[in-house]
Image (cartoon, rainbow, N blue to C red; front, top):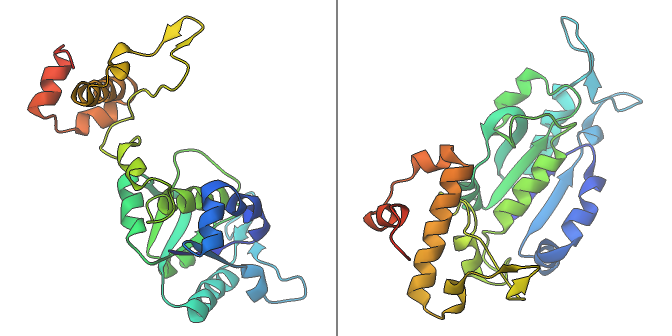
Length: 240
């Protein structure tokens, strides 16, 4: 899997790409991340990549020429890619979109800065993605989030491939509660069912807890679920 990041600040990614499982994936070549800076394609003595907005207003706007030139140069060097502009105006990122992105061989992540990018840049990307309804100083943090989320779905990145299938959002629900040793911690104990060794009971308990937690904490997700007959029985109070 290859990522192409268009950013003015590639140094922000150094420690992120060196740590933990992602660092191992990069070292092995399972994941490759390339960087291209719009500043390298900016004209003038000071390589200016931003300017004041037409019509007035506060802040600066990223100029179209260096940004589009960087996009095109990256593709000329390493081939066509799916172009994503990271923007608060984009569609909110969800696990289903992450799965779709993981099916693409190359993804370009275009990081905006300042007050945003010149509107004409949008003609040179395939889609826009947002992390949520809040403001960041630039797209770099969003790019890191996408790189990690997508990389986790690529074969060879996680130690256990089945791990992805049981995480939050993988089946439209939040994840069930998790416990590890010790059995008792400051008066709180591990549920008896998890110590029973009965795999069918454990499966049903985990499903029930995932449904209850999703209904309580994320009713928006719960409303979209298609409940099976078993789900309905578990929610009605049937013991796992």
